[in-house]
Image: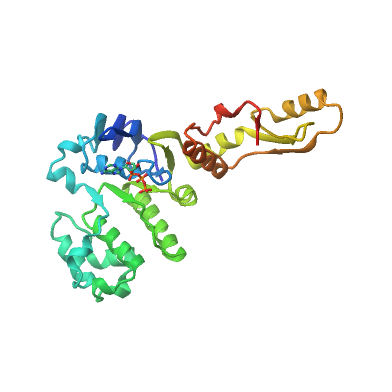
Length: 306
Ligand SMILES: Nc1ncnc2c1ncn2[C@@H]1O[C@H](COP(=O)(O)OP(=O)(O)OP(=O)(O)O)[C@@H](O)[C@H]1O
């Protein structure tokens, strides 16, 4: 979906830091997101995803760091800048009694070159609901209407904060197709947040794993999976009955050393290559324990009790 050029990134952040009072929430984030890229900010609850997005959208003042979005500092974005950005807000809330097509047609008048409302309805799969009152839509249909309202002005950059929450699997699939089409066919840059690794892998050209206000890893899903698998995990039971676990880039050497030093067969010996999901969960779990961690798993090389 993306072809990186030497053009300035659509979103660039250096050392982005945010504190609420004396609580530090973002600890110096760097981002480079390019035109036409679908970029996922993946992280557990409280990681700082919404805070990051709100700063990039210009809704929240950062504590420190440099940020550029479509060539401007979001804290100083003017109306023209704002018109180039698509936000998915719950805009229908103020217009509950309107009909779907009426609402879209009304929002279209705010923009110089809006999408055709009928085409937009087809794009988000709401043609059948065009005449329906907004407060009679299902939760998933409302969310699609939110997305339609977010893209009616043909934004160059679209922010989607946990966009598929409450979607059934079919709606989620259709939504993924829609996002892919916007990026691929129209060059829209998409920044989405999610805590769902499967969604991030499916949708995003690149994923940044945000845990505890720090980006622990960033890359294409394939790169991240490769990096995760580079560290094999060897498990066995020691002579004293203790379960042992060691992460290593060279499992055959470790197994050879274990056999060399052993007085008999190694009990419960197992070698496995972690998946990206294993690594992500490990990272989140370690953060809960306050010790951090990253996709390369450098902190895990020593043998430890399982
Ligand atoms: N207005 C605020 N005042 C004080 N603390 C806040 C405020 N907004 C968020 N926080 C705290 O900042 C941290 C990051 O919150 P944020 O909403 O950015 O995380 P998130 O990754 O979007 O989480 P979730 O997936 O639950 O939406 C959390 O610990 C949260 O409690």
